[in-house]
Each structure stands twice: as C-alpha cells, then as structure tokens.
Image 1: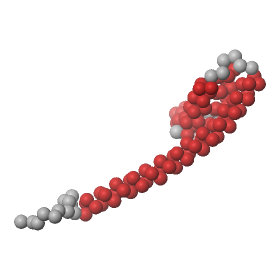
Image 2 (image 1 turned 135 degrees about the horizontal axis):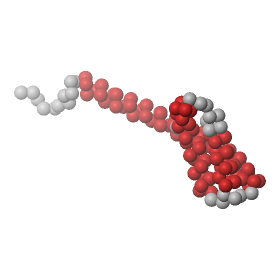
Image 3 (image 1 turned 60 degrees about the vertical axis):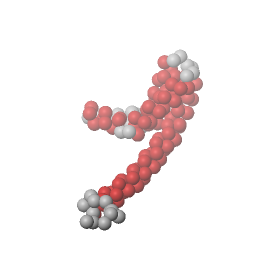
Image 4 (image 1 turned 30 degrees about the horizontal axis):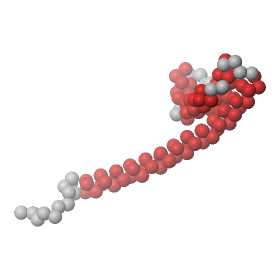
Length: 118
C-alpha cells in the first residue's frame, strides 16, 4: 500500500472543496454533486476506489478509506484555521499600509525635512 498516494488523495479532496473548486464545477454544469461537495465523502470514495483498483482486499480498503475520511475532517479544520490566520494577518498588513498612505498624503507627498527653507 502506498501511503503517499493515499495522503495525496486526501489532500486533493479536502483542498479542492476548501478552495471552492467543486462548487465552481457545480455552477458550471448547473447540477449539484452531493458526494463530491463533501470533503469526507469525496475522500472516502476516492480512497476506496484507489484501494480496490490497486488489488487490496475489501476489509483493508474500507478501513483505510474510513480512516482517510476521518483524517479529512481534521485537515479541513486545519485549512480553516490557516485561512483565519491569513485573514487576520492580511487585515493587519492592509491597516498598516492604509496608515502609511494617510501619513504621506497629509503633507501632499513631501516628507518632513530638517533643512531650513531659503
């Protein structure tokens, strides 16, 4: 069993849903895809299909697909947390940029100088 392939399947399934790619596909085809729109379901069925097509027994295939589905829940939570951190940091950066722009625009783009005027 190639664990790196299974980890890749889990990552792709969860991240495709997290980024909204499945919702975009649903919008284009104008049809709802309930199994694909759920990261846990998509992960479970994708891993199960991979395991069955690579000649693993059914019990092992089911066990690994359910485990991968459970891991998908935590990966989805982690990706949501990373998004929250990104939004928070991005807000701080744009506030700092807005503060700098306000400071430079207050003096019409001229910096304060210690040189006396002639």
